[in-house]
Image (cartoon, rainbow, N blue to C red):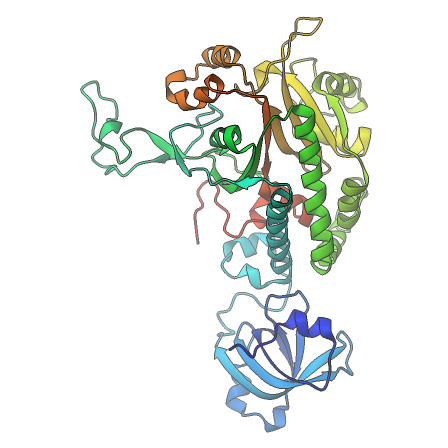
Length: 482
């Protein structure tokens, strides 16, 4: 098995007149002579030339689309169009048959909806091969970015007692027999008899535990799965997704923004360098898709241009208050083109507002800061009231073209009294988060952090339109297949 050479390495070397062993899956077999072989290392297929006149007819019949084969042969310069080199086969072995009558992936264009139904096989298509190689690169780049800066990778729990945001959209974890749930004398579920002795759920964020790490290790990051029991059947929501959540001691909001902008630019640049072929393929796929849309709905920038655009521009930084003034006076708001009209200060910004600021007004990525206290989480550091007596918090959101919010973060409230007061206002039980409050009792320090939804990043970098297409096996309402 170790003799095998990956197709990507062979094509990049361009060597000829050497003996090679290649293995992969048949993408196409033409005229009983030309096999298009792919092993997942690249989107490019390797052409295998078969001497069909001297090959067993039974073997030829077994070389079908989807079959796994091993080929020994000699590399040669290709005389045909579409490839510079090919392998002249001397020996072919079928490692795994594929019944052409039943194999659902034929050499033709399949819809993304159909491919979601066969997510266990869609990796074998050019589109999904490219997406998941890019996803792999982005994941590696995230770790490399933080490791180069001396961050500690902290594994926060998947099972937890807190729901972090206080939103109540968490999946419950229990080992109770659901047909016979024990109850207290007052009829409530008796969690004391459950496995953990208390009510638990799947994590919605590793942030609170991340803060504990930052208060000892200075700079930490988490990168793991998170879960939201949110009944949102949209192209932007998943029930299970991956989050990157750094927490930094001795950081203020400006430090936080600097780090987030640097991270995004680093990973995008890394993907452009390491996955150029895949991104060029996805870029062309998007251009072909755009041709079918009305002119008004087409993107101004191609995928590659959009990625470069984020690298070439410093992100525009402005306050929520400044953004509201811009949106209120904007043409779409005045002409009532926004689905959600911006009435004034206190409006919770929607994706259409965020995209207007990025794509139409500033024409660059935007970082919004200092949101109204009432529309943000309890742990965000409170500013002093402004001249109008309006209360804001040291929050920040990074907005990207075509996607809206990609990062959400804040400077955390390090003052115990202010934090407890806010928890009381929002009805968050302090006794359940006693451990979190301890970090404010013992050596509290200014600190900040943010969350980056990894799938939203992959969605942006690949140019895909549905978040279910950038995670191997999507979890969403009424679907947990594969």
